[in-house]
Length: 292
Image (cartoon, rainbow, N blue to C red; front, top):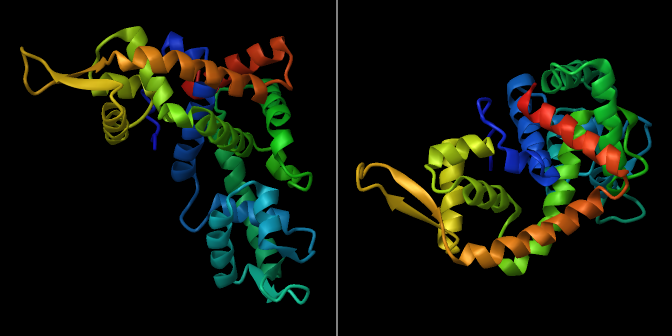
């Protein structure tokens, strides 16, 4: 959900919300992954190879926890690494239902080779940042992300802005989804409702630009909002081919509650930062998203 549109705008109402900025930052990282990494290089596989660098046999669950990805994702990653001969998988003698993983010499070579691509990714997503600003952003992101990371997470990942952004987004999305569940609102809906509430009726194309997502993605998002009775598409009398999006009365009850709950989640996540540090993070994330 939410392919990044490089020409997207960042409206004032959304530019002050850390949750929205994290969402947009994660979308930018995802887009950059597709544009920067050559075929055959998987960022999760690279993270797994880094985690196995010590040479100690580890379980798949340990690996998933260490690089902060789901067990399902790690299962696919490990299968690929084993098939490529980059990781060896052997039965765990202490628990015959599980396996232990070690990095092969070929895996070590691949990790060193893939590091250049990981560095290219970092350069792409922080272009325009000075070395000082880049380091400050990394330091602030690390402070926010660290409580949710394993103490054994490789230093190379802790140094990666892309890794930190996506892991913070992952945690924020999970916490916010749980907080909004009974309201039948998803975290991805919040930006749309805020933008429509502030800007009034607009086309799907305009909303897509304000959210920084593709046309097909905004269609899917509006489908959900319409199904929940929060937004309605209405055709223009002057041009029946065009549709405007209108916020429905139900949103007046739902949005304030959702905003309040989202604020609690955001405040909890950013509680490790002082007020000035939080403001600085918001400013740096805004630059990160817009590329300014």
